[in-house]
Amino acid sequence: MHSRRPLVYRRLANRKRKAEERRAGGLPRAARKPQESLLRGHGPVLAVQACVELTTGDLDRELGGVRAAMARFGLKEGWIVTLSQTDSYKVPEGIVHVVPFHGFEP
Image 1: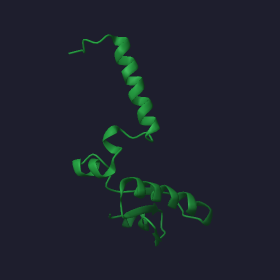
Image 2: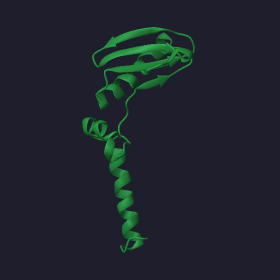
Image 3: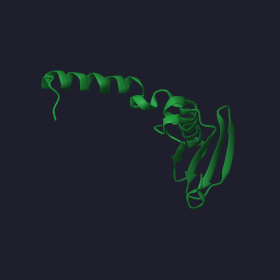
Protein backbone atom coordinates (compact mmCIF):
# COMPACT_ATOMS: atom_id res chain seq x y z
CA MET A 1 0.00 0.00 0.00
CA HIS A 2 1.28 3.48 -0.86
CA SER A 3 2.07 6.06 1.72
CA ARG A 4 -0.51 8.77 2.30
CA ARG A 5 2.13 11.42 1.79
CA PRO A 6 2.08 13.13 -1.59
CA LEU A 7 4.32 11.80 -4.32
CA VAL A 8 6.37 15.02 -4.36
CA TYR A 9 7.17 14.62 -0.66
CA ARG A 10 8.24 10.99 -1.14
CA ARG A 11 10.51 11.97 -4.05
CA LEU A 12 12.13 14.77 -2.04
CA ALA A 13 12.64 12.43 0.93
CA ASN A 14 14.19 9.82 -1.36
CA ARG A 15 16.48 12.44 -2.94
CA LYS A 16 17.56 13.61 0.54
CA ARG A 17 18.30 10.01 1.62
CA LYS A 18 20.43 9.38 -1.48
CA ALA A 19 22.37 12.61 -0.91
CA GLU A 20 23.09 11.52 2.67
CA GLU A 21 24.34 8.16 1.41
CA ARG A 22 26.67 9.88 -1.07
CA ARG A 23 28.06 12.06 1.74
CA ALA A 24 28.64 8.91 3.81
CA GLY A 25 30.70 7.33 1.05
CA GLY A 26 27.82 5.69 -0.83
CA LEU A 27 27.05 3.32 2.01
CA PRO A 28 23.54 2.65 3.27
CA ARG A 29 22.66 3.78 6.78
CA ALA A 30 23.24 0.30 8.23
CA ALA A 31 26.91 0.35 7.19
CA ARG A 32 27.80 3.84 8.46
CA LYS A 33 28.75 2.68 11.94
CA PRO A 34 30.94 -0.38 11.34
CA GLN A 35 30.77 -1.95 14.79
CA GLU A 36 26.97 -1.77 15.02
CA SER A 37 26.37 -2.92 11.44
CA LEU A 38 28.75 -5.87 11.80
CA LEU A 39 26.99 -6.98 14.96
CA ARG A 40 23.66 -6.86 13.17
CA GLY A 41 25.02 -8.77 10.18
CA HIS A 42 24.66 -5.87 7.74
CA GLY A 43 28.29 -4.94 7.21
CA PRO A 44 31.10 -6.46 5.20
CA VAL A 45 33.17 -9.27 6.64
CA LEU A 46 35.92 -9.30 3.99
CA ALA A 47 38.01 -6.64 2.27
CA VAL A 48 38.95 -8.05 -1.14
CA GLN A 49 40.63 -6.32 -4.07
CA ALA A 50 41.21 -8.08 -7.39
CA CYS A 51 43.75 -7.46 -10.13
CA VAL A 52 45.41 -9.54 -12.84
CA GLU A 53 48.95 -8.71 -11.77
CA LEU A 54 50.22 -6.68 -8.84
CA THR A 55 52.99 -4.47 -10.22
CA THR A 56 55.08 -1.84 -8.45
CA GLY A 57 52.97 0.89 -10.04
CA ASP A 58 49.71 -0.69 -8.90
CA LEU A 59 50.82 -1.65 -5.40
CA ASP A 60 50.01 1.66 -3.72
CA ARG A 61 46.58 1.88 -5.33
CA GLU A 62 45.60 -1.72 -4.59
CA LEU A 63 46.91 -1.64 -1.01
CA GLY A 64 45.25 1.74 -0.48
CA GLY A 65 41.85 0.37 -1.43
CA VAL A 66 42.12 -2.63 0.85
CA ARG A 67 43.52 -0.54 3.71
CA ALA A 68 40.68 1.98 3.40
CA ALA A 69 38.08 -0.80 3.60
CA MET A 70 39.86 -2.42 6.53
CA ALA A 71 40.01 0.87 8.43
CA ARG A 72 36.41 1.80 7.60
CA PHE A 73 34.97 -1.50 8.77
CA GLY A 74 37.43 -2.42 11.50
CA LEU A 75 38.79 -5.51 9.73
CA LYS A 76 42.19 -6.96 10.66
CA GLU A 77 42.78 -8.85 7.40
CA GLY A 78 42.42 -8.00 3.74
CA TRP A 79 43.05 -9.82 0.48
CA ILE A 80 44.31 -8.90 -2.95
CA VAL A 81 43.40 -11.65 -5.39
CA THR A 82 45.68 -11.95 -8.43
CA LEU A 83 46.21 -14.36 -11.28
CA SER A 84 49.26 -16.10 -9.83
CA GLN A 85 51.10 -14.00 -7.22
CA THR A 86 51.57 -14.78 -3.53
CA ASP A 87 52.75 -12.32 -0.88
CA SER A 88 51.66 -10.59 2.30
CA TYR A 89 52.05 -7.05 3.61
CA LYS A 90 51.90 -5.88 7.20
CA VAL A 91 50.05 -2.56 7.33
CA PRO A 92 48.89 -0.46 10.30
CA GLU A 93 45.33 -1.81 9.93
CA GLY A 94 46.44 -5.46 10.02
CA ILE A 95 47.73 -7.76 7.30
CA VAL A 96 47.00 -7.86 3.57
CA HIS A 97 47.38 -11.25 1.86
CA VAL A 98 48.16 -11.43 -1.86
CA VAL A 99 46.88 -14.76 -3.18
CA PRO A 100 46.25 -16.37 -6.56
CA PHE A 101 42.57 -16.71 -7.45
CA HIS A 102 42.65 -20.52 -7.35
CA GLY A 103 44.01 -20.44 -3.79
CA PHE A 104 41.67 -17.77 -2.39
CA GLU A 105 40.11 -19.10 0.78
CA PRO A 106 39.40 -16.37 3.37
